[in-house]
Length: 272
Image (cartoon, rainbow, N blue to C red; front, side, top):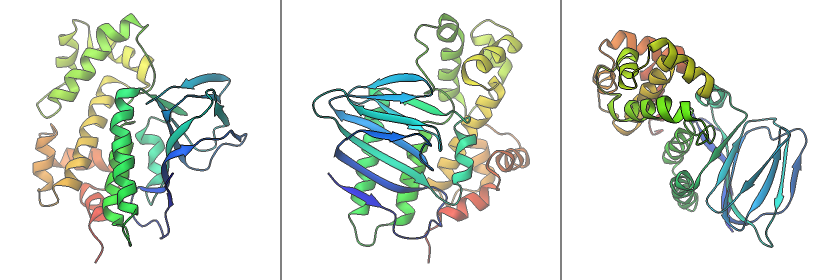
């Protein structure tokens, strides 16, 4: 049951403050919440969360991300409950709330859990090296956060026909065509409604307009490119994520991230 804690100052934008897996989970009660974003996922068995007056059962592969200082408790429902977990900090930790649309909790299903488990396992392998590659760990942490960004994982909308009929197809179109000259008008035509009605549905289910969702999704993809392709020009990245005007891209990036694309990339450069 490995568990690791960060042992150096958090100079990277996002870092794992703690991380572990194969953990025999015991009962935890936090009336004042936890000071960092905290993720817990069931590996085997099942447990029950009590949070904001609601109960959630975490079965195998399912997980929950909880915002800082949100009161919660959890305990095993099966005889044994094994979990994996991670807590997040970093120099840009204050921006995580905006990245996740300020949701107090996010539930993940088994499919998402499989991908998140791989990142946790990969990060633990990094911690096993002495010293660990802090830059690579920060990249892993950013990839981890991207599984919760944008709102698609905010809940289970299977019982909401309007979401399934209009919002879900548009999200899929954004995910596959964000790099093209895609507009809100194009997206609304895909599902045969007006742009205004589509944005009202996005606001109802995801807490943002269609344009905001499209923009944030493009900016998140830009962040991935800034990290994974350090030699790509900023103007090229702007084009690859659907921005015709590099100046507009830089302005929108700074508005949402608080720093320019170049400054964001510099934060991720390996330290000398």
